[in-house]
Image 1 (tube, one colour):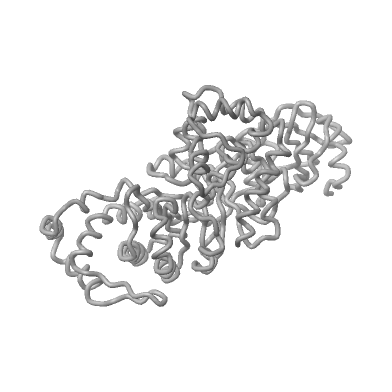
Image 2 (cartoon, rainbow, N blue to C red; image 1 turned 90 degrees about the horizontal axis):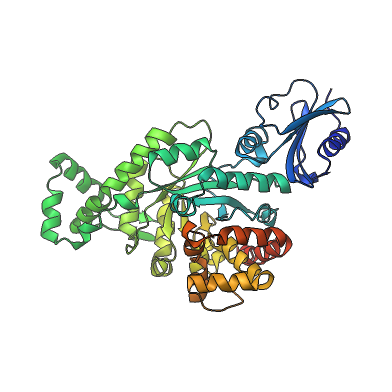
Length: 456
């Protein structure tokens, strides 16, 4: 006989001596799970009667019998977050696919909690609540598991059941890819930038041709037949390759294409759950041409590589976005994936305009929104700390941050200086302020995020 909800709530609150977070209450086999807030903070509580598969998996802090029921009280740690993701499906990340619009956030402090997810309720936009990169993990000394756990607890607390994603981006090592898969990330962002050979751009036409001729004749014949003997219609655009151009693209991107194939076939091809494979080919100082984009997509598709998104750096490729976004959008549409824009919050003030060109099939990375909301909270709640941070990072005085301005970008990128271990305890102090000012912090997040959602 199933435990009645009212009885479960009564047992949880009595055992934990606290108040249940109603939105978190979820039924499991022969029991219920919920978050409870008491004098010690937030606890995870599970009440069961009879055999429950979760019972042997929890990392339990204390147990008792209450109202004839068994109650386990647990900390919000990595083990228990993993159990939640396994048995409460709506609290686990899920793939975004290739059809709709999604927006990603980087909670570098792990302080946003459930502030973001509810803003997407009844919206035709999916939040990616853990957009975490290998570079940020190394800088902040905060691993990928902590990032997805923070998203898990935030979703559980708010009871947000409409689905969210978690993206482990900027991955280059096989070890990081395996870890991200084990941690339950729904999107794997493979960074191929170190496989792009920019030295080719410095070579003369004769040098490029000589190196290209080192490839077997059979390969060169295949490339000629594939790209030089036809034009390619993508939407209303036509892609054309010149021989010299083709040689440079093959030499410059060939290794990146082969590495993407290797990673996909080794780790992503046969996963028992749906994974979004995001390919990052953005490289500092390099704008992706339509011909490069088309060849990369075509080679991967005909080798059976299924990727959900191609990542471009919106900040560095701003000119490209204005001039050639329609043709890049047409290429992505032709091959059936989305475009994904890094640093979209710093480069794009109107997400709706870009989404319209992309027919709503796009992922925007708003990496700095939560950090800027933290800054604005500090301006009013802890001005002395904000001033210390400004001086340390060499930032100008301001009270309002507009991401697309030069000042906004400077503040957005200041996390690299202020959250690095050598900066001291800024991170700890900021988290303390945000915890005490959770309502104000949540309001700032709501304003910033809603401004973006309003354009979609």
